[in-house]
Length: 95
Length: 196
Image (tube, rainbow over all chains, first blue to last red; front, side, top):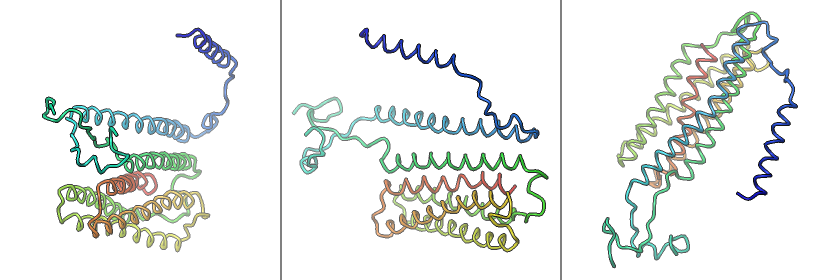
């Protein structure tokens, strides 16, 4: 790895560490002040829900795509007759 | 020309099917954003409900028609099922495709009309967007879903028209199905949260 890239990475890492040590506590908890237990629980539940849903969607899609790609790679490729490709114009593969 | 192990001549280019057609990928991305949109609305409703003074549903507000909407929910679920079987028939090139797709559209139309009638009755009882938290959340959540049902209904009508003209392909039918399954799938969650 070139020296410049290593120096740049180390600088970024040092900057991130410096920023994280400078951060203070964020008093932005909307449910901490609620007197209702049900309300506090609703905040916790919806936070978990809204965190898990996109992760599940993305994870599920990647898992499904991997499966499809593996299945496709195991299938033999279909040779296209030369006569068909002749009419395919500039979009034909290998031309 | 020499052949390879599969008996294909060397040097001939090969063409592969895409893993995911563009239309399907586009619709999946759109539906993912829609899932997050509805998740946000449902989360807001759950928090609003838990914060209500005097319990939920708020006292003095009209009650939502739970039993009637259960029938409507069954109609929408049956519509999704009919579309699933329509797709199976479409893959087999069966003449039943048109009948099943028509049934899915008819059930979707029934759902929209039934909800319209329900809204008219609720407005008559005094439940409006500005009548309170219940009305505000109800029309926001159920109204947003109703808009999606209408959009899905129009998309299914378009596919039906294409099928009638014998030029419906799977690259058009799949995205339409994905959208309708989303509309059907999100409704039981809304019903459970808003009505029950």
